[in-house]
Length: 200
Image (cartoon, rainbow, N blue to C red; front, side, top):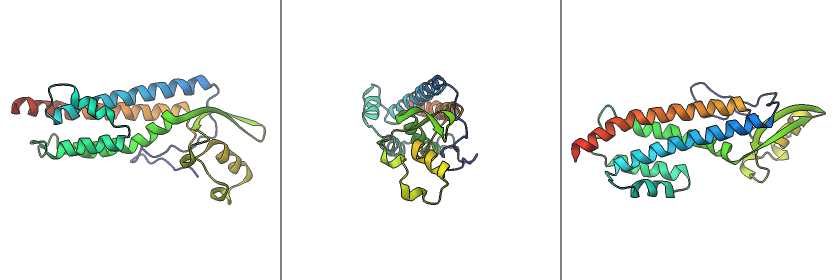
């Protein structure tokens, strides 16, 4: 039932592993690292937003940070880029495509941020610890009707875990993508900053 990850689309939910982590601490550590790396990425995007607005003070960054959902922050970046005088330069023109990719990864960031670390067992077998959605998160839970054709063991697993169950290794893989995305953002920041300084 879980989506198979595609190497060309690494933002998709990772396939559930048959075994989780033997200790909950490794999952907690992975969660903390991944969320910190995402915040690095967001801080770099806020700096780019400030540059796109040609702002000399921190008001633009504060405005960026005041928007809760990344979809809203993406809209801010897109709107600012649309009027950026050098937006058609070869070294910056694909920046909106990168922001689009970051938004896709933001769904995984949200799952990591709002998940619970839980030990899961099925029919007496201890499967280990996973990061799973909170039980009250209706969008990330299956209903009985979703699982009518599943086996008894699979039904139990899906109803217990929800629509994702990540191991520390899978969370670490997302963390690596968050770092890569930040590096790509920095690659755009350098020419954007140069054009802004030359244009002042």
